[in-house]
Image 1 (cartoon, rainbow, N blue to C red):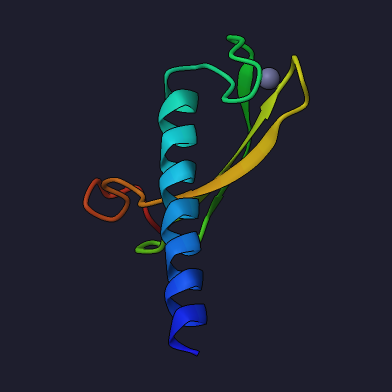
Image 2 (tube, helix red, strand yellow):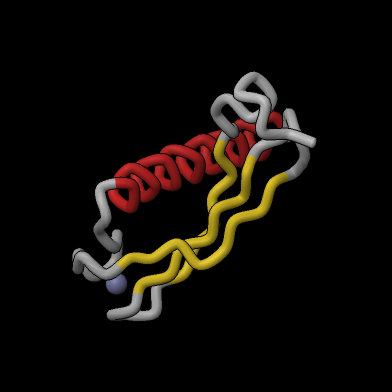
Length: 82
Ligand SMILES: [Zn+2]
């Protein structure tokens, strides 16, 4: 039972780490899969004022698609809400 729990936590951390690395590549404008400079932001959702934003990216070259939850920076503080 403990082993399963530790295993799933490890997988989850690994998954988050991989996502973070993919996001850092995407933020530089490159596709994590084919390394082409063809990644585009296709969707952007906000989970409210204090919630994270869901950013969806798609690669025009290979069809890679992924979405990331990022903490919205200065949503309410900058007075853009409401
Ligand atoms: Zn690609």
